[in-house]
Length: 527
Ligand code: ADP
Ligand code: MG
Image (tube, rainbow, N blue to C red; front, side):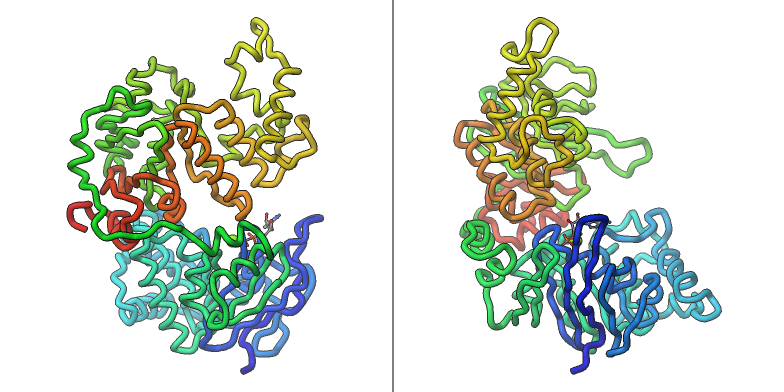
């Protein structure tokens, strides 16, 4: 079959960095073609080129065997190529209708060539056939992420769609929303559209795709059929042969699932604060900005024992950031209390951390590291209150440099040395600096927020190992993460955060579907 869309020998350079190196890729009508690769492999870059958002440095794009040049996404859209982006492109304060019309009037050549009334009627008809209820007049930013994604899909499906590209579409969905998306994707393929499904999750690729193209560091390293391979085969293609990382990936979460594992929320919240627990939180409430529909956090209670990992699961934006800030001491809640070793920590001025709590922050580049500074200087931030590194008001830099060198070897940080600027390190090695600083001195309490976001599989394995070692040496750990698999495979108990409240605290062996319901806001008693 003639491909509808074809990439031939595509090269993309960003300055001196080659993101794509002679990549061939094509899509035929009616297929679901997976593009698989680790973070940074070049998946989004390739598809941004095929959807007109980026220009290739070298190589050719063909549509139905005719060479084309896309100067913008609307050029691609005119050829029937649409993309649902990893980071949505909706304008949050505008209504759903306005968002749909925005694209229709400007990108498709003005209201004359593509009447807005027709755009709206088409979107409504399409939503009807897909069985979607869309609040057309609500601000796009106020909708649940799954609904925003549907609006993005409606936008991408405008006009005659021949190819639809989904960039990591399940990353923002709850486990319950994912099968519905897959249903939509299968349906669009059955109607003849060529689908590109980008993912780094092997299970999803095996479930959904026919052909699989694997990218590694900007090169195509394998072209497979999902029916003729398995998780181990895909993992090996993705990260390379004989790698521990490949085995870890293929094994996935090793926990067995069982049915009767929901600990009720009532039971948990009636637990009185255990004075011996390293960390205990009672009825924590944090109000949002005035006018917000609900508090950022309300009635959060839990305790964490020594050597325990409490996982906090949930779809992004349900209070994770606020909870982390309260636990770290950076934000003071209006109600409730946090006790560290049974004591209410002294009232810090905002901006000073709770002493004795090690934090692995979500955003290592903005919060975790001072990028222009050296590894030694960054590690000094975690040590300047310790006597051995001070002489009166002065820091003992030779001792700090020695400490940095020690941590570089203990935490396997790949860098020139203690004096290397942290901005020169790869993302994985930057995160190792953050983790080394947080975990080096066996902290009793650790708060880790999305500790593996954006890392490759090798670095992920390292982070998991570091957390397990901290746990083994007795730390009480709170792991806040939007990667459900990560929470389930590391935690002893899992609390699910929804709109600032715990919808349940469950065992990590609870079936995914039940946790999915909790992530969507159902209470534990109901599931
Ligand atoms: P993936 O989608 O597979 O995770 P990307 O296509 O986003 O990967 O990125 C591939 C590589 O190209 C990464 O190393 C990324 O840092 C780099 N890259 C992507 N966009 C840019 C850009 N605009 N400027 C410089 N480097 C970029
Ligand atoms: Mg990407």
